[in-house]
Each structure stands twice: as structure tokens, then as C-alpha cells.
Image 1 (cartoon, helix red, strand yellow):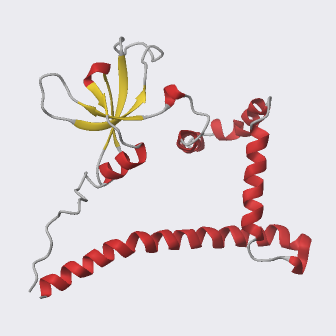
Image 2 (tube, helix red, strand yellow):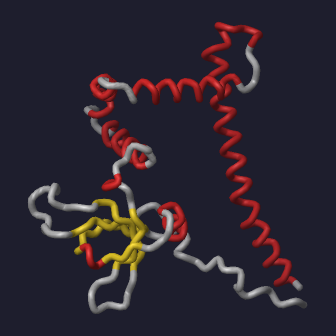
Image 3 (spheres, helix red, strand yellow):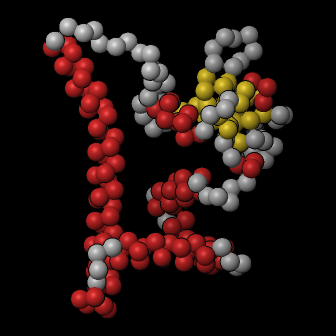
Length: 204
């Protein structure tokens, strides 16, 4: 009976934890955006401030910024704005990493830049490793890399943020029908089985 209660408790905890954390972080973000907006616009509108106006203002500003950077000539203006962030020591490394992360989700990414989930298998070996193709060609890499029909494959590590990037012949990889987000999530938890036919607790 104790074992059954233990299993039920942790199954309930595993179910509630992602929901609770999602709600909590959403609440923290919304509260922060509201407090910032209140300090910015309340001096101009006084008592006319209504809860939710901060979030609406933030969404509006983001849409306006997206419209502006989509116009011709916006690239040069953006480069001037980015100048301090791309030249200061330490700051430029942080900014470049965040920018690369944001660019990954950009809808304007070309087909050549899109990641593909693949299994990597060396000839003569039965071992398979799941990874993501992050580069479809190597001819534009610096001198010293092997040339030919090769691709870059990122191999994520389980239970932490990290991994390895390997450059291999294209015929070593086989695409699999899986979204990138699902593959990354599965890799994070070491591809633990989530099938419904897992062993059920024994009734007392």
C-alpha cells in the first residue's frame, strides 16, 4: 500500500509540476510587464490606466518594431543601434548568443538554414545517434575543414544544456519524421519511454 501511495504521489507531482511552473512564470512575466508599463505611461494618462494596458502596449511596440525592421534600409539603422553591443568585450558574446537564439525562430530563415532531425550512423556500426543538421554545406567554412558533400550535425546531451557538433559525410545521416522541438525535448530527458503500455503499479 505504501508503494502504491508513493507511485501515485510522484505521478501527480510530475503531472502538476509543468503546469504549475508554466502558470507561475507566465504570471511573473505579466506582472513585470504591467509594472514597467505602469511606471512608463501612467504619468501621461493618470487615473485612466486600466490593468492590461501594459501588455497591450508591449505587444503593440513589438509589432511596430517588427514592421520597422522589415522596411528597406532598416538593416543599416539596426547595425548602428547594435554597434555598442557588438564591440564591447563580454557584452558582444552575450548579445551574439542571444541574437543567434532569436534568429533561429525567425520566419525569414531560409530553407538551407532550417534544422532537420536525423539519425547519425557510421558505416559498419549498429550504433545510432539522434541529432540535428545545422549546416547543409561546408564549402564556406575556414581552411582546415574537410571538404566534400558533408553536413554539420548537432548532438544534444541529455539532462543539461549542451552537446557536440560533428561534421560528417551526408550519407552517414538519415532524416527522421520528427519536429525539432520534439527531438530536443526527448533528448533532454534521455529518450525515456512515454508509451501507455508501461508497467502499472501492482494493486494491493
